[in-house]
Length: 306
Length: 329
Image (cartoon, rainbow over all chains, first blue to last red; front, side, top):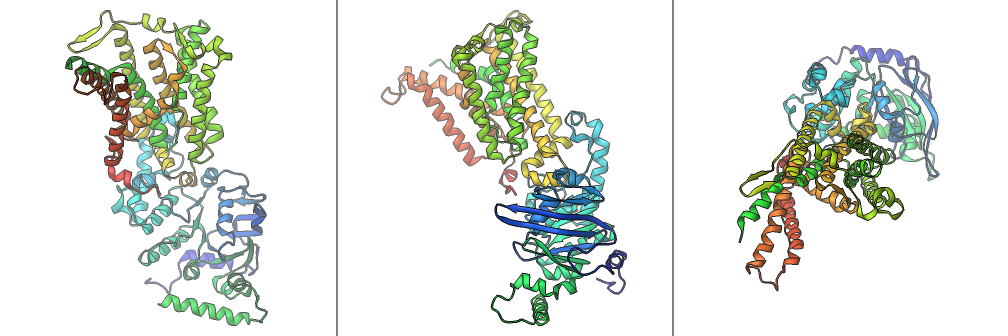
């Protein structure tokens, strides 16, 4: 991090866009890429997700946080078409995505990764990457039988894949089976593969889970570079240091609802957020929310220093 | 002991129509199981539908031979759609249950009494292959020492090997293409493929149809070589032999099913010819095994060999052990 003093243009753009947005659940954004309204998902009697209204700012990195069972991943699955909501609608780039199957969501420019990394083990790293290319002529059965139809396009896709592999420092592993990569390398591969789709918005489900610390910085750098490339990032994460480090905006979920929104610092000091994580005043004593917030942030800082 | 006969029979089974029928069926199953990861346990139904499609068209309804072939192929496609539409959205093991049940339903329909007017019931149908054999260009059989094939066998084998070659070419071209890449990726993790914008259900359906149609070619060869169809030959053990052949040759290898089928039938024919000879010569005492039991013992020995193969070479003949040992995720 040589140039900490100069703010990268992507960060400045995101900060400018989010400057006047009120810090409250469902706050309207200047230029939202994704707008969701009353999205509800029930599992039997349990309402896992019940999001009234939420907007995601274009070109910014937005973190989705919340305690375990808050419905973050379920909300992710709903937005990306991997699960169907009981009710609700949402728009991406001004087009409704409600009821649209997962593969068409991806084609429209919203690509996700998974909490449990899904590297395609018995495909080579480069084939994993090539798979991400969209609109491939050779992916139609009859055309696939005649290589002349798809060979040129395959070369273009391979060139783009090699560029991305170099950027993610996976080029040395090009011909290896993806199953032979380490956990962190698989995360990198999954992210690089998602970029092959050339998405407008990248959805990362716990990108840091199971990644060794040496790779964490490199992964963080890659996520930040997505913002500089003009992409929108929404990610679920438990690691508060990462959230604080890279996100422009934080959305907090608790018990299926959006309970707070704001910049990382304000959200982490919000008493509603602390209640959601630590439980509300069950013992009847009145906590000083501000004091608890400070304690929590200090604790976080202390563990990070270790 | 007459070694000429023992080796002659074994060598013939490397190339004969039965071997070809199983190879074609296994090439189709390899597309399902080896490349796409679809646990299809009803491959015998694709052969049965094709064979009966041909036999019923010609023998029952008196229509031309070529129409029978078209109806047989169409039957395989329809069966793939019927199997696929309700099950391909479900997890892989449900497909296994549904396909094994569907194959049994197909077999029981063919042998049911109420349909026997058209299907011939448990006796099956004959007299549908005359048009095929009338196209036979050979005028004399093949006799090279210990191996002999008559005129009819030669003609079925010629057509059969052409079908094998064409099938292998199609599988080879398809699997090295971007289409094949999507197919293999679905085997690894279909959600990941979905997240990259591919219509997974459509690809699985295409795979089911392709493998079913390739298998149906095996059904034609099987039926024509016997000049008869009989419902109980299309039972579940037919499918299990196909799985054995696919794994023996090496799953997801282009030539695996053909080599697997050759080895399987060579071993089976060799053991089945050797054991009775050993018994009749008194090398095997009758208290251990008599000539009637030798057939079953043949299957036991071949089964034992396959168990050992799976333990010591799980990747099959052509497979890559490193690849097989990678964890699925």
